[in-house]
Image 1 (cartoon, one colour):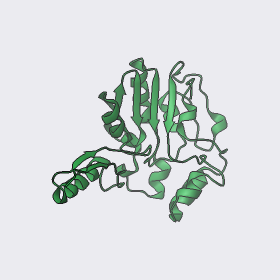
Image 2 (image 1 turned 180 degrees about the vertical axis):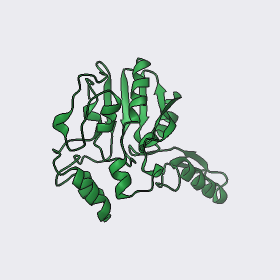
Image 3 (image 1 turned 45 degrees about the horizontal axis):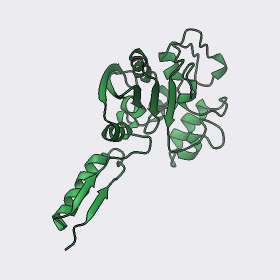
Length: 229
């Protein structure tokens, strides 16, 4: 019988199994039926959880650990991938939705501020590019928490006109690349809360309330100070 070659690449099942775990399970199933098969497993991701692991397998590099806080302000240690002069930060590593029990209260409190520690650490290492994977998060602050963590003054979520960047750390000369599998703006008729609430009216009401006076913008990456995006 001719040997078969099989490539397995399965995206993660959120909250259940990683891409690599699913691929290994599928590989064992294939080998049980075709022991002679040449099976290769590759982790994949779509800009959400697992993106950093998938890129690490393909690009190599070092995982850097940074003390920071999660989306509810609890101390934690997060990792990012340093490969050459590029840092790959996975937002879900710090502010992932899997780190909370989703309620209207947690969505109103959740902040992206903890991501700032990873950006600042990467900047200190003189990287030339920061890639930020945006998916899988449990935050709805449009990246304003990140701005606070970088030193900007931000009064409140709807108050985008009240942002003062004078004291914020600048990222001149560093390219910021955001990875996402959707193009929805932050707010407005096609805003993410309206489109992705998945029938959860409490969630939609909470986020839409915070967006009531917010202009339609793109999330997170566009506000990183001074960067080339």
